Length: 311
Image (tube, rainbow, N blue to C red):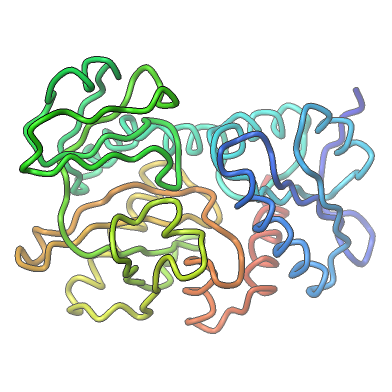
């Protein structure tokens, strides 16, 4: 297998390989992100090859011979440290976070521990067997059950306070799941670019902010800037940057919050950090970048240039 140590070449336009698709439950979202990023990078003057990431990825990359790999994958394998490890082994520079930060962020339990150690607010949680969660309430309702290592609200169950019986989890749920205290309130999110928080968006939806609400047309509304007190805005900025740093993230990340306004600052908690946020022009992180004057091609260019500058 031919290896290539990626670095800026003598060409006027650096060569970028955009990874998209992949085998995860979020394949369709990744295909959209990758397509939009590739188009934006071409507009910005880069030479772009789009690669639907599969088992032949090393050979496809060897043929493309990129200066940098733009990772537009979502979900398992693409953002859990696996493809990052492959890129390290093959010697390519690549965008977004590295192996450890990606693996930590994808493992919700370990990420929460990192946040606690950094003094950041999270809800109580535990890891339990799927069958035990089906048989009894392993935590006093209300609570939420979710896979410990999936993203984009895949497989989320909300058990309300008045629930008489435990949730009947799908067979598609993993054998071990996370159960966490339900956090009421408004859905907020903050993107971090490098060491800078871009803004705060409130996400409004008629129900739980699940996969359909995130990705189907009309599923949710984004309010930017969020109509919140200055104290909460500053706290979101601060917490998002500190969470980004606690996990060791690079490039772009996005931190999701719940805020119970009846409790003021005490009602603001971190849900999770996404190291591979959605990357279409209307996705949350690009919307925040646009709000501070960075259009989509400029955002994609920044991400590429940051990766090219790494040692």
